[in-house]
Length: 197
Image (cartoon, rainbow, N blue to C red):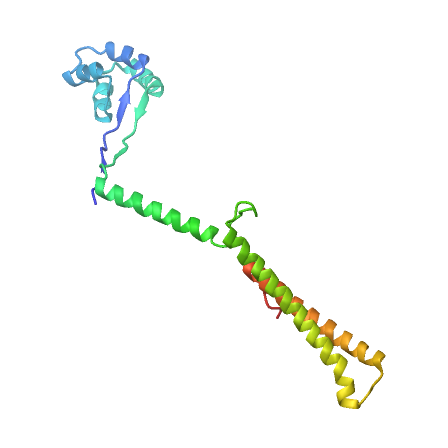
């Protein structure tokens, strides 16, 4: 991995007051002239400037420095390898695709009855018809068992008692069958039924 470079040089952009103050220096050095021409002063040069100023101008130096702007060093980052950047972009896209699939895996396809193909509609109709026939057959068989059980076990020929017994057993089996049908439907829709502990 390439290293980050940092230029540790602090540069001061002189204000108009500092420029005026530097103009009053008698016999400025070549460094001061070059710094004024470039409009950049370094902290090391400030010591030289202060030593060349007249004693009454040294107080003005601090006021002039307050008005100046300081440019602090910033890191210089190297350019990334194009192959590495391409691989990173590809991995980011794959990760976003995985995250999208994870979030949408239990979302049903929201096709209306008109938009869905005929095979899908037939499968749904077939599943509904099978559940309905299974419910009717199980309730009918439970009623028949309840209707015949008193006669076969006790020899009771009273029709009222036999119908009552068949109806009660049919209702119990119907409720149990509805519970399992609803639970299976919810499971197919993506809902998870939690067990009560």
